Image (tube, rainbow, N blue to C red; front, side):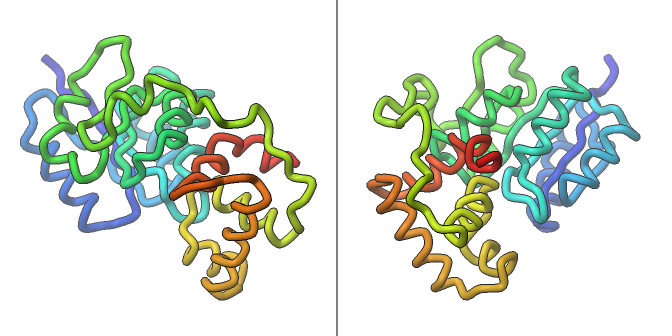
Length: 215
């Protein structure tokens, strides 16, 4: 049986090498390339035409969601597994919507990545830390559309980057402002958008990313 070709995209070299070593010990799979960002991943997808892509969502310059969109539009035969530290419902739903077949928490990689790679069922695979219940039910309290009329231009810029799964520190660097200013904008955005509770603003930003980018 021919080994399935796998491309790995993650900007953290130590973690990426760990995944490479993990897959190297698996029968039936071989790593054909590594990428550190969306652009290099797209280039190597076209070079190697792998059977599978394993990618993080938090990547430099462009979000991993953009990579999923590209794969869906250009190489839909490639099975995509998200391997991320994010386990929020909005991330999981967005990844599934964009064609990923699994969402694995990074902390579960050593115990569940192989199962996800071998999984060929129609259902969406999630690792234990992510939790299957999180994708079973929609965000019942979430609006169908965000009311962005009250947010300022500065807040809108922060919200756009947040929708790309950027951290506060990454947003601060990108916009050349202080992390404290980013946190102030995030607080104001949460108040104006009614995002109550931990990570709710992030969930809304990811869930309504298309609306935010096009507004």
